[in-house]
Image (cartoon, rainbow, N blue to C red; front, side, top):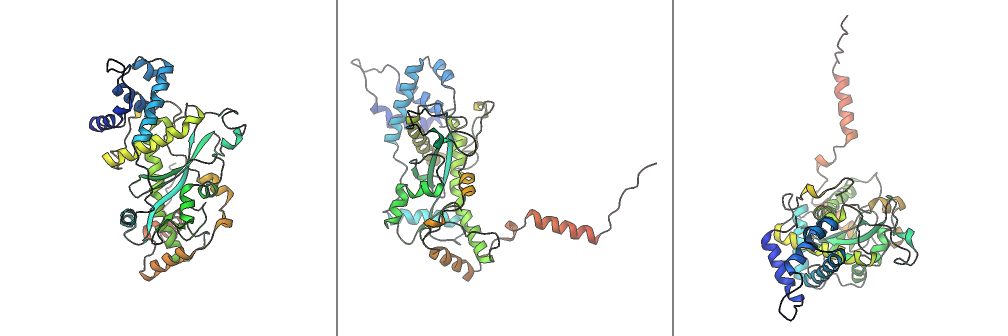
Length: 364
């Protein structure tokens, strides 16, 4: 119901309790436990009407309380940090990624991608008249986020500087992480991985383009995808866990970044407490309403339809070096991943041509 078990709820309550003021009698108008429960129930997907009724709160008090709790959680849970200047932590991140690819693609510390959260149509005043920039090609108004996660699906860095209609590569270039990497703050032993929409650079790797690739470029793309799935998995867990994303967000436009930040912080808090297996992220399907969509709406379709920002590419040096590493160690794409629908059809055709097909006779 609140996406936390009782011990984790109590621990979070203890972290935020001192931020709430008491009156002259040492009491609070609304107990902090109730305010935390209300906020968590809201981000979990509960209707604000039902929550306000259940806890006997009027609409104004409900929204004021939720906003205050979200602001305090955002300040107290400082658990979204990319350890650019900590070599030991970067090694830990790289070790986690290497376990997934069995050491075949070393150096990866994070995977990045974009996601869009549905929202109600913003007012012209809130977006300086530029409402259309927040309308996506998927047919809804949305708020975009660029995120980078580790192999445990924990968020390390997020950026929400650009409108949802912006190309992924452009949104990333304007992020703080991109600027830090361009300024040489990420140690040269490490890199991040991205999808086809992003340019391929020395420490920002994306797949080789094209369908007719040689076996080693194809192998590189396969092993790169093993690391890229970290971020897609994180988006899936985030949206599955917090039902506030199952429908257009009903909060003021200027409050949306705070809501997303807090959900990402709570996501990391839950990963640290419960892990990221299927049982840990299972949600109460009773929260779902007709028309809800609990799938992560990735920005891939928009970015891919516009093509890759090749004008931003600098070098494929690192990609070629890692491809050479795969070739030297004979790390090919596994056979099970090359068995496509086309090859299955071809095998069936051969089987049919080599055996006589008995056509049943019609009964008279």
